[in-house]
Length: 149
Image 1: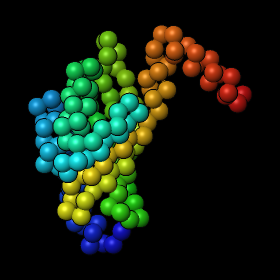
Image 2: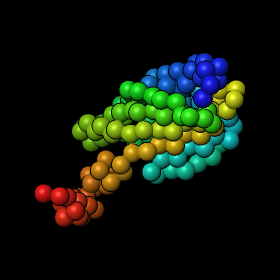
Image 3: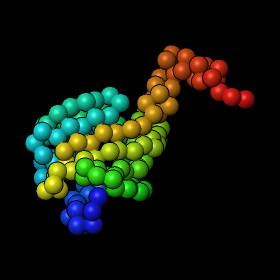
């Protein structure tokens, strides 16, 4: 990415990171100011289009876990196409137990600095399915058989 474009997109990226790091149920709607109307959001459980659908995903998170927090630890720019890669940690409480998920996101910006797509990459098996009573035991068993000793 050329330096001029990088400078132009630095503030929108900083604003987007700040949005996530300070996200609350009341601030979810602020995504309307940061994203294009047809924004795509994808993670291991959702693949939605549009600001309203993106807001529903975030609201659903707040309805189903306690004290969710994102912390972006690093980012890098792609070689083109207005793409930033974010490294983050998501922490939350569920049933009086704290969980932590490490992941990365690919965020594509429009030329005017609005988010066009946000695709999350994280290990749903390790961070979610393994914690389910029956399925978790099966996944842990398979992992133990595939692990090099």
